[in-house]
Image 1 (cartoon, rainbow, N blue to C red):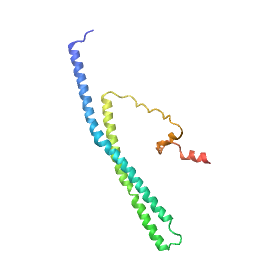
Image 2: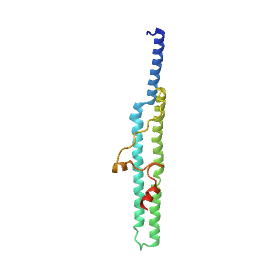
Image 3: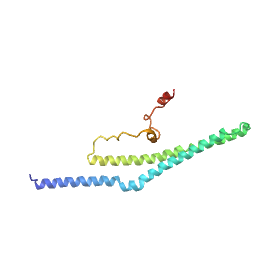
Image 4: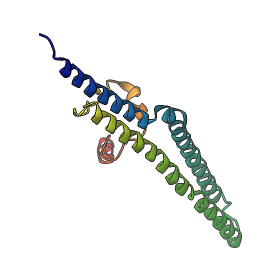
Length: 166
């Protein structure tokens, strides 16, 4: 079976347009920019969130510990002064949440940018299939505990844990 020359030319033109569109979508995704700037920046922001949160928690715990360890026979005015000072330190330490929110927003914006660009690329190449779910975690024993805290609605409910110990 032979293909007419004008059909071949039309197919080539269509294929060339498709390749150009795919290249444009890949260029818009900016893989080098993502790899060199946006992803490292997001990773740094997450590191700073961890560091700031840890520092604030330590400040709060230290202040509470100092209050709890005041001698019982401390004069009331001196006791009040220490408690007020430490409570103020705790409130100041809680200001980390504003910075954490700002840093989290930067990371979320990066992830949404990547999601948007990948969605456009997937639509261009005709990837309209339902996402494939990740394989079920087959770990056992203590390895299962290495996930960190569960998201709301996931993991074991506190009521279930309480029922186990009742």
